[in-house]
Length: 269
Image 1 (tube, rainbow, N blue to C red):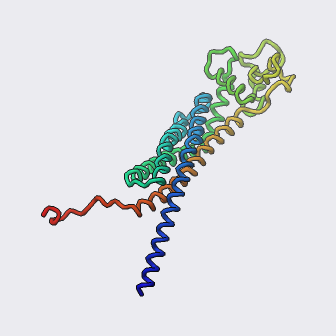
Image 2: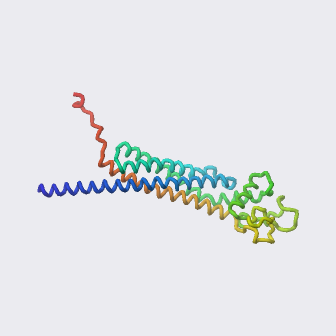
Image 3: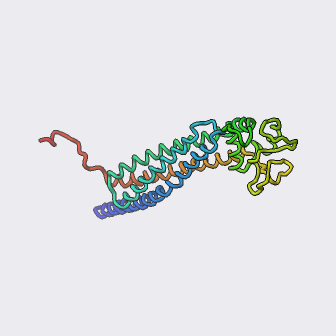
């Protein structure tokens, strides 16, 4: 009976030792991954903010950069979190383990909020872009206009290499607006011209010199891509952080807080 009990205790100790070793290895690996993932998350957040800054005239939602700022905040928190996870895997400290748990909880809140907002804005974006872009394109007053909307139209057509809302034929519906040159030829803005054609003046008789795809589809594709990127970055990182919390919990279970004792009358006697 004693032999069986000794064998059971030995197996239990071996299992605990293996579990602690596995938790330490996993925590070190996750710490390295989380530390490196901070750059990817910061890139996605910065991309969202820059896209809003460049095309805010076409975006009615003023809170659109919020998922980007939350992603950048999470990226900054990831740096000390990764360092803590690596240090705990090398040498356990119950205070560091407690701080790591708090940081993981903060990261989960930031990333889930960012992922949820990115998903919401991605689904609402199409209808808002279509109405706003159509209005600004119709109000276009020429390349030398002081109107911010007209400058935004030229900017998006150059940056995205596009012409019109749906395609270049949208400009045929605006033949009476003031930006057209005094000619009977149908024209489009010079921002529709390809860069390699320096003498292009937007003449529709020379389609090979013009961008022909619409700006709406291109901007939608870019916005959907960056929002999807942020969403999946936050989702995958949240799963990895849950694994890091689980590994840290295993190490905390084998290194309990022993300094706290129940006070009773015998303590003061």
